[in-house]
Amino acid sequence: MSAESERFRSRNERLRTWLLMAGVSLGAIIALSLSVLFSWGDEDITGGGGGGRSEAEKAAREAFHSPPGSCLTWELPDAGDAKKVGCELPHLFEVIGVVDVAPQYPPGVPSPDLTQWRQLGKEKCAETAETYLKKPLDPEGKLSIGVLHPSDQEWAEGDRQLRCGLQWAAPGGQLQKLTGSAVDEDQSNVWQVGTCLALTGKTVGDPIDCAQPHAYEIIGLLDLADKFDGEEVPSDDDQKTWLDTECSKIAEEYTGGADLTEKKLILTWDLRKAESWKAGSTKVNCKVGAKLEDGSGLAPVTGSLHSDGQAPKTSTATPEPPPTSAVPADPNAGNEPPADNHEPVPPSGAESPAPPDLPQPLPGA
Image (cartoon, rainbow, N blue to C red; front, side, top):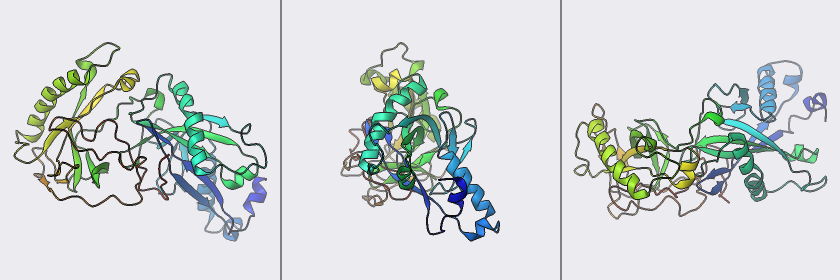
């Protein structure tokens, strides 16, 4: 169909592009569909007030068909203002490869359903990611896989191309902006000091103002490679021993010597597994949170622990359940209580739920 005929389609017909975000995070595929709707009518044809919108639609359409090496960003929840930007600028998605699935889906075959799209993303994009990065993709790292696939209309017209990409999703699923190419990105899944992560139900969510109830406050950033060199990942026990000492020093300075036990708070940190170490992920966060009295999960903390911030308050009440828009890949993931005051919480195997701020999240595969 020509661009000219597309322009004159009925305003009740819409060009749809689906963004399937298959987060290869901690070994699990987490997917949701983002329906980006473009529509235009007579006012666009006559060059009235819709001119700006037509330009945005064109830019978004071009963005969703970008070649490998392109970086995309948007601000609207439905990505209707998506555009291509230089990868040196903040962006949400980097296209890493184009895969043709025509041999599996010849003309006349219906478009895959969402479960099949997830599986295709897993099959086709994981290897593409490692080839693009020229190193392993950390299964527990900052980067996860996303997939752009054709709309039903494009599929009917013969488009069989998937665009694999890399993105950074917070624990609650909210996409975070990256700067620079993914090839140069440190995959360590860490946050800047002073960041607070929301508490969603009993699990960790997205970054939030520390004045709001939250699960963790990030108080430090350490590099395990400063202590442990070599290709072999240090044992969990060796990591814990070093991090116990170093994170305690950081907590003392960050809080101005506050007694965490008296405040019913726990000091915890990340650990790195062999797969992450092999991918170059050696950085970890020191963080502070609180446990529910029954040990069933994390308790909300309000206020910053920083010595010049507002003193935090903890609650032992069971937090409200997470919103239905945030659906974890594994309903039981992320709900494990901390084993003690010096164990990472949730454990490194916890899975992130699908993004809550994007429309129609779907259960993980």
